[in-house]
Image (tube, rainbow, N blue to C red; front, side):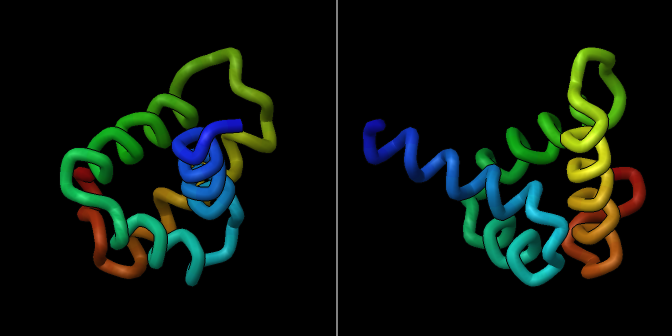
Length: 76
């Protein structure tokens, strides 16, 4: 596994961890473009078919956590 693969795996492990502190910390550590990419991907995970139910649930929790923290708006 490359360093970049490991980095991305750690980012997604945190975003999908269901742990509010990890979710908020890792999201805020990303640059704006990366935040938008992650946010769009989380939205797709909650709206598209084909995702495992646990992935869908984790993505929904991440979005709700970011909303509650005021990091993203309800309209995203």
